[in-house]
Length: 313
Length: 177
Image (tube, rainbow over all chains, first blue to last red; front, side, top):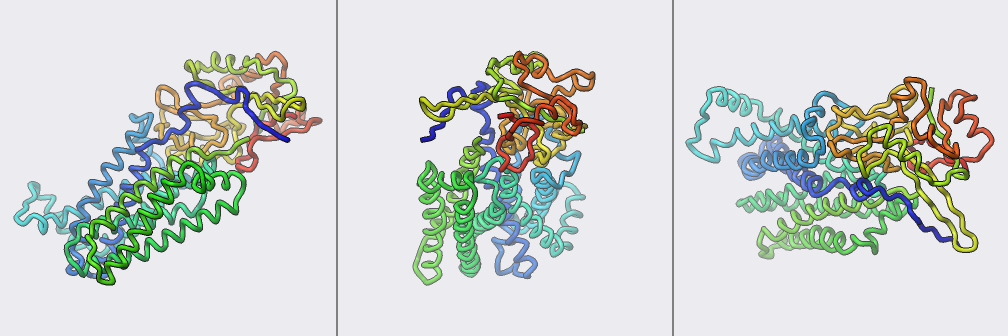
């Protein structure tokens, strides 16, 4: 018989209760970053494919959400910092080994890009819009002329941003739940899918919705596949990985994860989307809102649960 | 040169002098500490075994905290000591999340703080504060590459372990068993 118990263990009043230092700011940022990546990727993709006319919401209107989401996300990130006055230190160096560093640089490029992209469509959104400054007209002309290369850049940066939201967590080997390379693709696919859900919700054209719904069904399929792989990897892994998986397989996150994320956030919306394609009348906002809420809960659970898992010695 | 520390778990009585010495030497704010004593009880009566460990930053060779730091505030100096430059730290918490030993904490002033192996004392040729005060001399510090340093001699004829070797960080704190 072998029992183990910590008589005193480690009990530092001002440190141990605060080791789970990441709170709501991080999942909110990861969520907004994911949606932004999704919207920008598809805006770029359909511009490159030359489908601006057929897919106006994807290419034009939904992109107005991106700067707002990114700025809110960045603000959440800023709130999370404990030494806020020094945040500019992020931009005095590039550290390739640190996902947070190149993530910060990606955001440095993608945020202004999303702003000029949306701004270049403002005249179509609000007829009669006039820029107050002459230079803005020049920038607008430049953006419209270089739309295709910008679309390519946007797709590439969107993929980096989407992967980064997952890699940010998976770089930490002290948190076994996060320390898996599947998190990168999983967060990317989840981000693309939530982005699509937002576009589908906004879209008024039946053709556009059908195209996007088909893509979303594939993405949700891939996401379910990656989630299964995630748990296969954990259960075949070392003791700390198995412990991490058990939080979701009978542990405290079981209902939240399988109920809200997998069933309500992925399986039910994908069934509704398939039914809609077959011809059933389903209000478009139902699958969209389920995917959007599922994505948010997914990120909250991953950030929260990851901080519980650790090496025990 | 590679600094390391050997902690004799058979000699440690868990008095906590190393903790107080560190807090005093490094002006650690109240309720915080850079080193701590863990009391681990194994087994049940009558076969009980207790292990006392004075723990601190492991100054890992493959240090995840330095890898994850986005600004380079966490860095490695001579002898493999991991330091944090306070006015480069943005307080993002990446290093706290990446440390398997929970050796880092968020200082009330915002930056991240941790054990420095008393680098300011080493520069003057002195020993670390915790080693200096240990009443049972269970702490041994020195250059691991020097076969006659205090730490090398302590490791020589004893069995030892490192904590969470499976984390792959190559820690430089050795617990004599």
